[in-house]
Image (cartoon, rainbow, N blue to C red; front, side, top):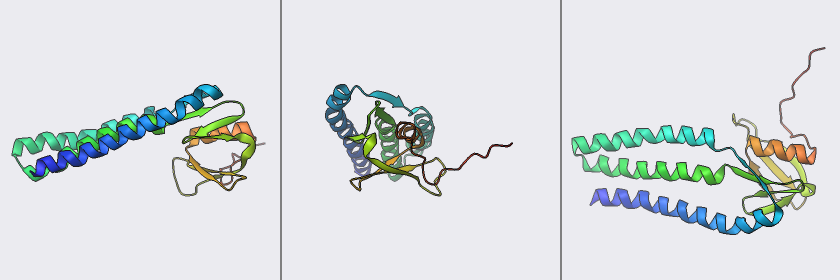
Length: 167
């Protein structure tokens, strides 16, 4: 019974991720085609890291079948399925669509002219940025998409480290 509960927990999250992926594709496919967006896919490193992280619960699942411990089987089954769901989700989260006048953030087209400022989030090692629009909306971006937005808007991000040039 507990094994079924672990499988149900993992499969429910997997189902949610698949549903989320299809909703996003449905909402954005027309926007992408209409606006002739280019795609920046920067999922490779994160997908590799998460795939490697999936090895641990998978190994635990194999071990739990060996020792025949039901609670461990249930927990590691749920963790393994969740890990696979997150690897799949990386391919949704780490794509950025843009053209010369606008970009697609989540499922909304943001014109570069509507961006007021770009702020680097302090204390986050992998470079997260917040885009603020004149409509007082905020959007989180990773380093790679933020670099494109900075170049298209000619805005410098607040909080970016400035490279000193030696004379």
